[in-house]
Image (cartoon, rainbow, N blue to C red; front, side, top):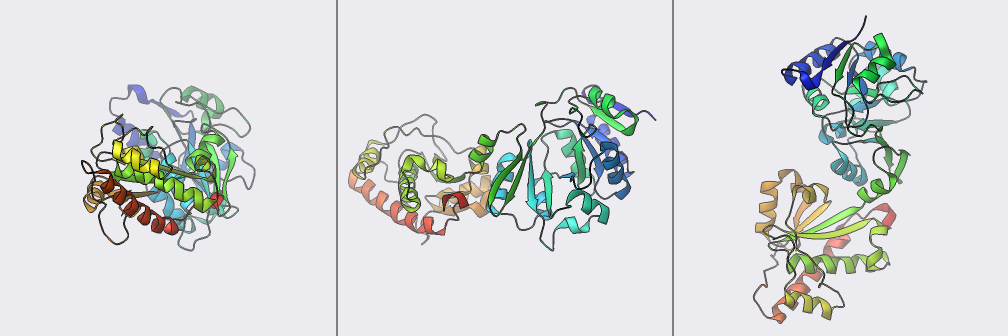
Length: 378
């Protein structure tokens, strides 16, 4: 029977399209979805017969795992309850997006264990599971409504070119797909990058949309310092932290990126493009550090999302951050471990700035010992 094809671009109400897809998946049918990479062929991971049919339609060899598509990183880590810092970092920075993370599935509380036996074998045949949060609102809406994850593969026969439009899906699969949601040509028209993350680090299994160089840059740890205007306290903390990290890692400050660590600063009320205060420049120069080229920047959603740890200068800074970004609460700390604020020296003499820098340095020395630096840094 020929597939039902829905032109999503001309649908009167996309919510109706979402509900039709949810119903089809619940009934054990195969649905071709647009994603930002290539079109994907999906089956409910709770439906054994549908997943087996997906494997048969694809013509996949035994042992070639299907990925699981989930609606968010939080959902993903229900399937991998003991994620490494690196996998958390990549999930936070890459999802939703064109990256499939292959993670060890060895936790007794993993929801993979609650999938039907043949589905478990299809998605985790070798003790690891591939997880994806696609960056296309249509499939994300379906994932928010359907029970469980989706077993997902590219919507083509194994060994054949990827389908990057609804028309190409129909040409490739003909009557072996039940519902095709046609949203035109895929944004990237390339497959997702597949990255295995384990205790040894990052291994690129397939370089797709995101290059290996970019993936390794995304894998770097980011330490973020936050104050008010990003003109004195947090910029000084940024430079001092770089200096201390270089000492700890036995490398030059300019080589920290190669050791998997980045340090940045921002301000809650900063004006983009401003310069540092002259007193801060002078105090840093006395310590052999160059602050002249610093350019202030405001705190943003992207900085908060990508930061592994955020150090605020005062309790009020920390509270403002977690009020606006509650999801970052566990990553946001007061810089001083003794719950003392780093007071703003703005308008004060150079000596006040010097004492401020000394307080920041002492706090950073303590905080660095607490950081779980990337394995590549050790």
